[in-house]
Length: 96
Image 1 (cartoon, rainbow, N blue to C red):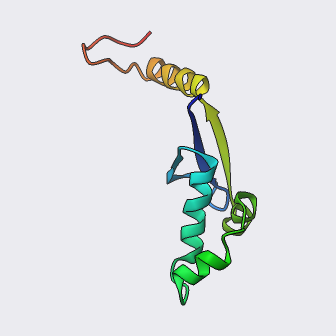
Image 2 (image 1 turned 180 degrees about the vertical axis):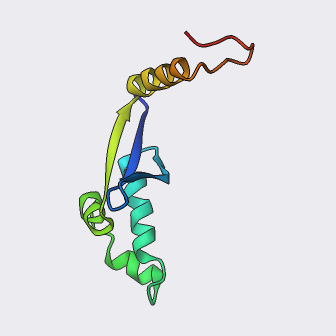
Protein backbone atom coordinates (compact mmCIF):
# COMPACT_ATOMS: atom_id res chain seq x y z
CA UNK A 1 0.00 0.00 0.00
CA UNK A 2 1.36 3.39 -0.99
CA UNK A 3 1.71 6.04 1.68
CA UNK A 4 -0.34 9.19 1.37
CA UNK A 5 -0.69 12.35 3.39
CA UNK A 6 -3.64 14.71 3.48
CA UNK A 7 -3.13 18.41 4.13
CA UNK A 8 -6.07 20.40 5.51
CA UNK A 9 -6.33 23.92 4.12
CA UNK A 10 -8.26 26.55 6.03
CA UNK A 11 -10.03 28.39 3.22
CA UNK A 12 -11.54 31.03 5.48
CA UNK A 13 -8.11 32.29 6.57
CA UNK A 14 -6.46 31.42 3.28
CA UNK A 15 -3.66 29.57 5.01
CA UNK A 16 -2.70 26.09 6.03
CA UNK A 17 -3.64 25.03 9.53
CA UNK A 18 -0.65 24.14 11.70
CA UNK A 19 -2.58 21.03 12.77
CA UNK A 20 -3.53 20.15 9.21
CA UNK A 21 -1.45 17.08 8.32
CA UNK A 22 -3.27 13.74 8.35
CA UNK A 23 -2.44 10.18 7.31
CA UNK A 24 -5.71 9.74 5.39
CA UNK A 25 -8.94 11.43 4.40
CA UNK A 26 -10.71 9.24 6.99
CA UNK A 27 -8.42 10.60 9.72
CA UNK A 28 -9.24 14.16 8.60
CA UNK A 29 -12.98 13.34 8.67
CA UNK A 30 -12.64 11.94 12.19
CA UNK A 31 -10.82 15.08 13.33
CA UNK A 32 -13.53 17.33 11.90
CA UNK A 33 -16.18 15.07 13.45
CA UNK A 34 -14.50 15.53 16.86
CA UNK A 35 -14.31 19.31 16.37
CA UNK A 36 -17.96 19.42 15.40
CA UNK A 37 -18.97 17.55 18.57
CA UNK A 38 -16.76 19.64 20.88
CA UNK A 39 -18.80 21.61 23.38
CA UNK A 40 -22.15 20.13 22.44
CA UNK A 41 -24.58 19.33 25.24
CA UNK A 42 -23.67 15.62 25.00
CA UNK A 43 -20.57 15.00 22.89
CA UNK A 44 -20.98 11.21 22.72
CA UNK A 45 -24.64 11.46 21.70
CA UNK A 46 -23.76 14.13 19.13
CA UNK A 47 -21.07 11.86 17.64
CA UNK A 48 -23.54 8.97 17.33
CA UNK A 49 -26.22 11.14 15.73
CA UNK A 50 -23.76 12.59 13.21
CA UNK A 51 -21.74 9.47 12.39
CA UNK A 52 -23.16 9.53 8.84
CA UNK A 53 -21.72 12.97 7.95
CA UNK A 54 -19.06 12.61 5.26
CA UNK A 55 -15.80 14.49 4.73
CA UNK A 56 -17.20 16.83 2.08
CA UNK A 57 -20.03 17.92 4.39
CA UNK A 58 -17.55 18.63 7.19
CA UNK A 59 -15.34 20.59 4.78
CA UNK A 60 -18.36 22.72 3.85
CA UNK A 61 -19.23 23.21 7.52
CA UNK A 62 -15.70 24.24 8.53
CA UNK A 63 -14.95 26.05 5.24
CA UNK A 64 -11.83 24.02 4.68
CA UNK A 65 -10.39 21.98 1.88
CA UNK A 66 -7.72 19.33 1.58
CA UNK A 67 -5.03 18.08 -0.77
CA UNK A 68 -4.02 14.43 -0.93
CA UNK A 69 -0.34 13.74 -1.70
CA UNK A 70 1.27 10.51 -2.87
CA UNK A 71 4.58 9.30 -1.47
CA UNK A 72 6.37 10.36 -4.68
CA UNK A 73 4.91 13.87 -4.51
CA UNK A 74 5.98 14.24 -0.89
CA UNK A 75 9.51 13.04 -1.65
CA UNK A 76 9.86 15.38 -4.63
CA UNK A 77 8.55 18.37 -2.65
CA UNK A 78 10.88 17.71 0.28
CA UNK A 79 13.93 17.30 -1.97
CA UNK A 80 13.08 20.52 -3.81
CA UNK A 81 12.61 22.32 -0.48
CA UNK A 82 15.92 21.02 0.88
CA UNK A 83 17.78 22.10 -2.26
CA UNK A 84 16.13 25.52 -2.39
CA UNK A 85 16.94 26.28 1.24
CA UNK A 86 20.39 24.66 1.14
CA UNK A 87 19.56 22.29 3.97
CA UNK A 88 22.25 19.93 5.17
CA UNK A 89 22.02 16.25 6.02
CA UNK A 90 23.23 14.74 9.29
CA UNK A 91 26.85 14.66 7.93
CA UNK A 92 26.72 18.38 7.14
CA UNK A 93 26.44 17.86 3.37
CA UNK A 94 24.12 20.09 1.35
CA UNK A 95 21.29 18.32 -0.43
CA UNK A 96 21.66 18.57 -4.23
